Length: 278
Image (cartoon, rainbow, N blue to C red; front, side):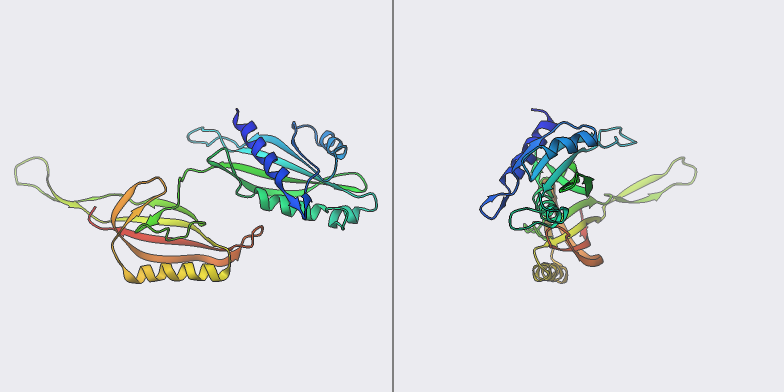
């Protein structure tokens, strides 16, 4: 099965499982071929509403240096209609699921959705896409990003930044200290090896927690670890083990924020570790 088909099938299956009360949120959810915008709107207007089309649209431009291909991109067309008014199609009623509700429910379900094992959906943007009187069509665009990290990094066997946070590990240079000397009348320089010096390891990313209280607890645990200053083994997301590491600093970057879709508390951060003697 191709990458495009795998992603499309996963998204369609997720949309089909969405519910509103005791019934399905969408009357129609299926993949569709990318067409001219007017053709797509005409097609989705003939479906049982509310409806969703999953459309493979493009692949990002390749990287300029390595020329490797970019991430696949998909569009989700959503349609809601009312025989009474545009307002009902937009805001909804007891009988009609409005496009506002539809877009929020779909975005919450698809954001960070795992597809194809190691890929996740990332909402890029969304906007009205047209529609005739009594019907509203809405478009959401998603990037399908392949994840490089296999798991959350740990410090002393614990996910110090929490299991839901986004963390990127950057290893600093491993340097060797030397002493150089020379003798009069002899060409060249003699070098004495003084051993490997400490290495800096940085974690950068975003702390994520379900609430402010949960994030406060997570930050407090990090600060306690910093004050303890104990040497522990760090394991990064690729399973590489680094012994004799000490947490040296914890910096919050910018203000605390909230995820627009999930309401999670967010805090950008940076940890600096020192790896001693290795």
